[in-house]
Image 1 (tube, rainbow, N blue to C red):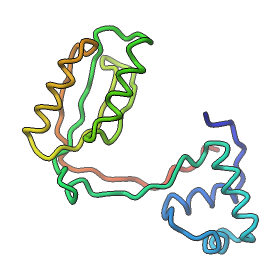
Image 2 (spheres, one colour):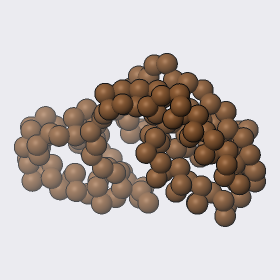
Image 3 (cartoon, helix red, strand yellow):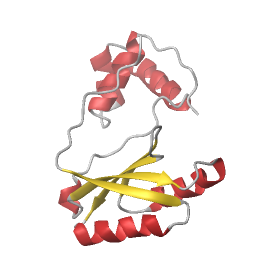
Image 4 (cartoon, rainbow, N blue to C red):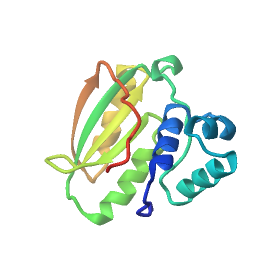
Length: 156
């Protein structure tokens, strides 16, 4: 769980740089934000230990790896209850098609971003969802285009 961490201008600069390029060496990162490498490393480790930095990832083009059909599944459970949430989320997270799962408010309970090889795989996946006893409804919207935005900037 992320702790409530007070971020100063150095932390903010560090987070921005790492979000733009998570492969920066500590030395380059320190130069860019204007601190000593030892300070940079200590700050980065503090932010990791506090849960602010959750990981480093490669951004992969789904189409380049055979998963060019993306969709958003709006899932409504039969009953929005605590005992159903954990097992459902774990099942969704282990699916190879799942890119993200969000527990949301409103008429639906979950928004699931998936990437499939084609319409046949998407159809099978939706039927797998509807075959689960806790799922009451699934609405599927195709994703035509996506854009990522800039780095998350700390509030304040």
